[in-house]
Image (cartoon, rainbow, N blue to C red; front, side, top):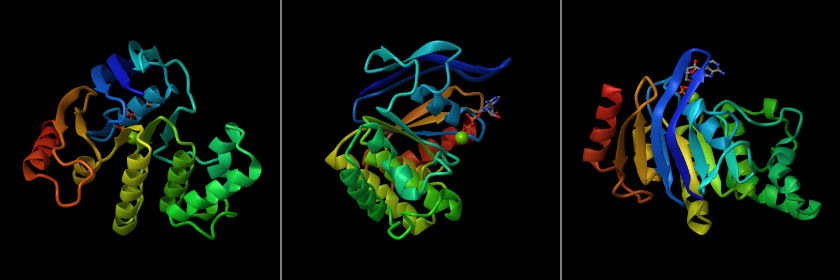
Length: 239
Ligand SMILES: Nc1ncnc2c1ncn2[C@@H]1O[C@H](COP(=O)(O)OP(=O)(O)O)[C@@H](O)[C@H]1O
Ligand SMILES: [Mg+2]
């Protein structure tokens, strides 16, 4: 599925958070969004997910206007989107239950995803019994279990230590390689952006598009191209 953000503005009361934003995301593209705190990154993801109406402009998903949330577009929340009363296992099973996957297969698939995010043994824990980083990994497992066509992820690796972060980035790349989806993710980490994404959109403080930087070597090992790092950082400084 492609996404089109067409001249989108979002206001909270009198306050404009996003202004005249225009962005196209191609089917199976990975786009990173970065920008100063409070510039509207989470707002943009919520609008893309269909959880927040735009004040003007349109959001299209494969040419169809987005009007409400859909299981096809999964949102990984910045601050915990898990259901607090459901166990880790039952949180990960949720998208499978919605698709009416039979219980035994649901359980096996959830366990497999939990293994892949390094949470074997925590299946029966409640979210509040886990650290923030572990909860992020449960969210990632739940999202991947649902095989959505669009993944919208709000700083999905922000609470992870460096080692786990690298492992989760690789997992995302590996799953995406096997079953490509369209991904828009927010990050403050320029190297993460240039490693995972095909393009990096830099937003200004007042929610406009400052620039788009293409990554010449997305999803390949090795450090980011220095000129591209500098370009993103320059965009952030000017934002
Ligand atoms: N529901 C809301 N009502 C009013 N203001 C909000 C709401 N959500 C976010 N904001 C404000 O909108 C601005 C952008 O928020 P957000 O999209 O969360 O930014 P970011 O994710 O880039 O840090 C911030 O100033 C924030 O305080
Ligand atoms: Mg945010």
